[in-house]
Length: 134
Image (cartoon, rainbow, N blue to C red; front, side, top):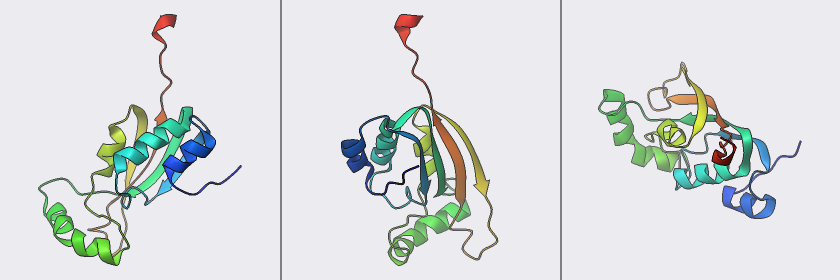
C-alpha cells in the first residue's frame, strides 16, 4: 500500500485517471476552495467500484436554529480553525456524483457539537454501463 498526499489535481497528473482503489478524506472538504472540483478529481482518480471513505463537517438543515448559528459563526470559525467551514452542505455535494453512498451522522458529546455536525460514509464509484453491450 502506498500513501499519497497533495492536491487531487496533482495526483491526476502524476498517477493518471483510475489509479486508486480507495481514497480517504478526513475533514478535507470543509476546507477546500472548490468542493465540486476536488470531488470531480476524486471521481477521476478512482477505479470502477473504487471507494471514497469520508468524515466531513456538514451544515445543519437549512432554516434550522443550528444552521443559522453555523452561518453566523462561520466567518470567525473559518479563521480560528484554519479554513474549516462549518456551514457547507458537503454530503449534498458528494451526492451530486453518481455514487452508491452509505453515510451516517456521527454524534459527539462536545460543547462544539452544534457547529461540528459530522457525516461519515463510503461512496462507491459505480461501473459505467456500456450501451454497446446491451
